[in-house]
Every structure is written in C-alpha cells, then in structure tokens.
Length: 434
View (cartoon, rainbow, N blue to C red):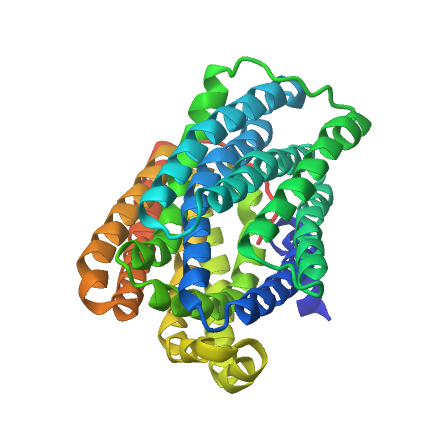
C-alpha cells in the first residue's frame, strides 16, 4: 500500500492526471479501432485508397502540430512558466492559430494535389475539419488546462473523439461510409462543436473570446513550440506520406494498417507523456545538481519498461489482432508489425528528456534537436524507400527515432550541467520530491 501511495503522489500528482488522459486515450483507441475496421472493410480490396487517405493525414499531422498544438502548448508555457494573464493571451494565440491554419491549409492542399491520389474535394474537407475547426477546439482545450483545469481540457478533447465515433457509427451501418462522406461529416460535427466552445463553453468559463493582433511573445513562443512539434510529426508520419509519394500506394495502405496496430501500443506512453508535460515547465531545484535530469531519467526508465512490456504483449497478441482487425488484403500488414514494434522502446527514450529541456529554459535548443531529427528522417526516407518500399520505411523510422533518442539525451545532459554550473551559490528551493 505504501508503494501505491508513493506512486500516486509521484511527479506532483501525475497519476491523477494520467487517469484522465487514459480515459481520453482509451476512448480514442476504441474510436480508432472502430474507424479502422469500418474503413478497411469498405476498402478491403483497395489498400491503395486507404493508403492515400492516411497519407493526407500524414500531411495534415505536421501542419496541425504547427497550427494548433504549437500555439496551445505555448499558451500553457506563458501561463505556467511566466505567469501571464489568460485574458491577455487567448485572443493573440487564437489569431496565431488562425493565421497558421490558412497558410498550412494552402500547403496541405497543394502537396496532396501533387503527390496523393485523392480528389481535391476530399482533401479540402479533411483540411477544413482538422486545420480550422479542430485547431480552434484544441486551443480552447489548452486554455482550460492553462487555467489549472486539466480534466476540463481532457473533456474538451473527449468531445472531439466522440464526434469521430458518431460520424463512423452513423455512416457505416447505412452503407454511406466513404472517405468523402466521412470528411464532410467531420466538417459539420467539428464546426458545430467549435461554435459551441466559442459561444457557450468559454463564456461560461468567464472568457471573452476576441481575436486580437498577435503579440510578439505569442508569435515567438508559438514558433518555439510549433517548429519542433511539426518536425516530430513529420518524422513520425513522413514514412506513410513518402510511400505514397513514391507510388507505393498499396504498400502505404498495408504499412499504415500495421502502424495503426503499433499505435495502440504507444498509447500508454502518450498518456504518461501528455500528463507529465506541464510538470517540467516550472523551474525546479531541490538543492542538488541534475534536478531535471534526475526527474527525466526516472520517468524515462518507467516508460521504457512500459514500452518493452507493451511490445511483448502486442507481439504475442498478433494472431488475435489479425483475426479481429484485419480483413481482405490488409491481413498482409501483420508481416510488418514485428519490425515496427521496435519503435516503441525508442519512443519511450526521447520524449521525457525533450520535456526536461523546457524545464531548463532551453526551448530553442529543444526545437533544434527536433528539426535536426526531422532532417535525418527525411534524408533516410528519400534514401531508403525508393528501392525498398515498406522495408525502407521501417529502417528509416527506426534510424530517425534512434537518432532522436541519442540527441535528446546528449542535449539534456549538456544543458543540465551548464545550468548546474550557472546556479552555484543559488539558494535551494523546496519542491515536491519524485
């Protein structure tokens, strides 16, 4: 019992927020599984179309990270680390997200028209739903988290997940599930939800939401977060986009299906990482050296054990997963899964030290690590995929993740030592122990 109490109190109440995040990600897992089954059953003999669909989201993912995840996390940093008033922040950060949404939408539609085999209408509907409406919802959720209401932020995100489930559950039984209809349903549902947040939820929380001219702090802080998030998303989604761009459409569909199975295994890591993010933002010092390094090492060790256990469980469960989730030609995807499982331990090694860099005030250096890793991944995709197809995609993904893990820890150790040297003679501050 004492061990359980210590775990519950560890990392400043991380367990409580982790349960909320787990509730969201558990529902997201169910929704992803239902959507995957429904869409692949419709296109079970056409993995190329499914691959193109996933490739569009592979383009939208990095741009979405830049458009709304970056401003959302920057909003939290300005509030938690620097103590800015939320009423002074929301108008500027929403304006930043809107401006980035316009730019990123143009980029997404142009790229998809050139390299991805979906209609412009289908791509446009996906872009509007994700880069406009979903971006607004996300920033509103982060505003609620910045106000100290983490469960409210999770409930905001749960609303989006439920809408995805409603769209699939409505279209599939009626025989109307197509990529075009699904994307159109997302536009209607997300748009309605965004307006509800704007005119009902935020006013009820006491906010007067008005777009304002972005402040310099809003732009620069958003850039510091948007760039690394976009780079990280490009690294994780670039393999699927590259397969489609190099005309491996059928392999892209199979690879995306295999990646979806492995994605389920990454959920525990994402749950812990999301709940721990803002705990690294305040400056901390318990009177000893390596404060953020020690916190990062302890959490990473735990996440690495979770990743190994999850990888083993997924490998053993592959026959069951194949029988339950894969239909038609998608059964071939099971051959790719064992290789992609190596991705999970590497993922566990990199996330926490990158958050630790934020605690050290090294957001710019953190961005540089992510950008360099994205450059490495793109180079590997260009080098390995044309001649090897999905095997090259796996090799490039693992290689880039290994680089990110090493680079993140090198940066974390270096800047922690630099911070310790600069803090000699500083009075210790009492903080909760890990």
